Image 1 (cartoon, rainbow, N blue to C red):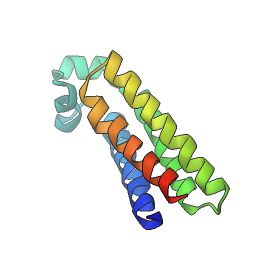
Image 2 (cartoon, rainbow, N blue to C red; image 1 turned 90 degrees about the vertical axis):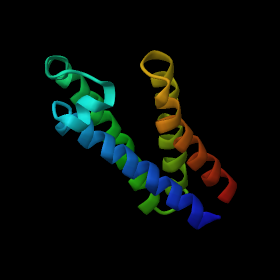
Image 3 (cartoon, rainbow, N blue to C red; image 1 turned 60 degrees about the vertical axis):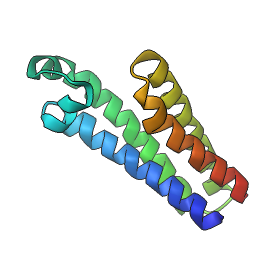
Length: 120
């Protein structure tokens, strides 16, 4: 169960690393624009906001990686903290921005959190 939990945490970290790249570097290109269906003008106008969001997603990824490499109890605590942050951010995004965020961010975070807690 421990290995399964670590794999899920790693996948959530990779997901947030991907979101960082999408929002910080690809926002005005096809992958970023396609995410929200923005035209080039809207993507250009919202790029600074997206880059800021991307940076926060990078912090989530970094915290999860830290949780994977740190010895316990710090590693366990970091994983729990950052996974809770992922779930809260996903729930907030689903309510305020797009319901898809519930499935793309909150659900994977919640599954990883449940696995980490169960493996303890």
